[in-house]
Image (cartoon, rainbow, N blue to C red; front, side, top):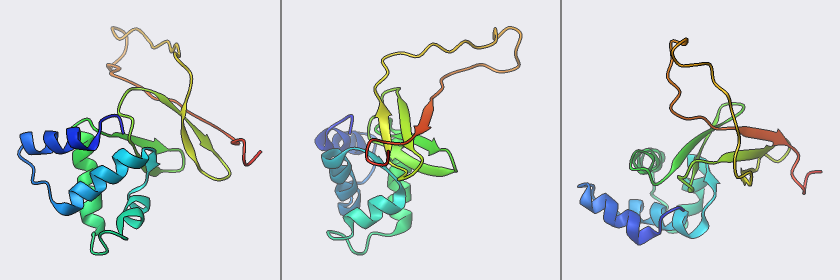
Length: 138
């Protein structure tokens, strides 16, 4: 996770959100393991400690952490939603066989947009997901 668990817990408290035991378990798991999680994967991972963790609680906590800037939401080709513990702008590689998602170690990427004066939109950011086969699946 881009931030450690104590930092996120402090942020939640300062913003007036209750630090429930389930939220704490989610924050600590993400901080300890990092990565790109679907809500279902995360719920499965914490059920050993919190068998009563509801799907709604996991989704709500992930959305809250995203809104606070502690996580980044990544829409993977095919429509799968994942939450990235690295909130800094970066790109991804998706293995089309095993569906593993990894940060793409490309320091910069130049993308040219239409002059905003000529377009009806304003670009505020973008992300790239490269697809292929990872080393294990190749």
